[in-house]
Image (tube, rainbow over all chains, first blue to last red; front, side):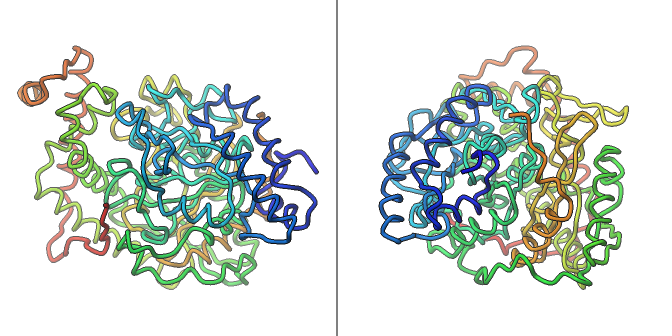
Length: 475
Length: 58
């Protein structure tokens, strides 16, 4: 077998099914990598070594008898530690939950187990999934595999790092402001936030992320891997009503004929505020899509610059509603940085929350107009590459000579991802280049609601044409 | 702003903020006010709140 880090989820699945490799030997290699690399990166905050070995042996026995639970049979994956795992500590990155052991699994955890995936461990995250750095004061800082002096992004930073460093072959995260797509972009991997409701949300720790904005998402090495995982874990569940109204995923055809497909590249003041290298990478991505036969046109969305204000109002209000009682009773259970953010919700009136939800409707309408008659919209995943840990702590990053706030309460980092949390449409981030100092950049591809299939096909064909997947991080 | 911070500290007796943290809260509150003013710039007349996203946590 080739070096494990050269593999993707899809190639491992093929090797397991053909008998070229076995779940136990794959897991052993992954655990060796984790032992060697995780101390440098802190992607995992809990390893489930014994349990994983036991499960791998079970999967191997079944494979020997020609029985496969599905395409994830024997594949090592990880879970963001805001997903409940029955009998296994689940912290949401919070000191308050440092010893909490849930008595139930999240729906996605149930589905992954049924599908034969092997959970290697729980990954680090920003405290309560409320931040973009994964510098966690209670469970340590996660480092970026492309440069250990850089943040991996957040809040699913441990998941992105684990995938980037081949410490697993797919990870489940959550995304209320870009918490899957942003770290995916900053760590050079793929991150998909499907349509709101596509993956049942039950079992995500309440109070993590945001009530009306949060979606379960996936981090993988390729769009093909994301399609395999999405197929395994999507679907309705009565414990999440929003999942009941979503039509079936359907067949995911990654080789869909895209000749003549129409793409809108989102421009305007937010694009102009992104770094020059980011803007160039998006223009280059547009040219690659044109070479693939797609028709690319520029679009502008009038109220896009207001997305941050709309999102902040909704998110802060919902955060205070979730945390008010425990902040009042146990303020010492929160880091000061999270406490001083969450407390802001106290000063947002009901009329502003309602106004933000009405303005959200306006933004949804404008995005619907922009994508009408088109197959997707594209935009940067982040306005800048990964800032250094020092910059994040200081709070500011230099963007072509201009200072932008990256560490504070209204992080510039999420400005391109949050609009798609407000609209709820499926959006994927794929690698689209590198900054001059070698840090990955990401391209977002957003589709119409429920059209994950087309989003994945465009991402897959772009990946193959761009060649960025072949670049390897120094880890 | 100072009044709001005093209110926060009165409401959460266990919370002892350092001077640096008081400044951080004040800065965040200023940013919040800016955000709410920005929100008020949007004309939402005749728009219904977004209610398509229903969810129940148990």
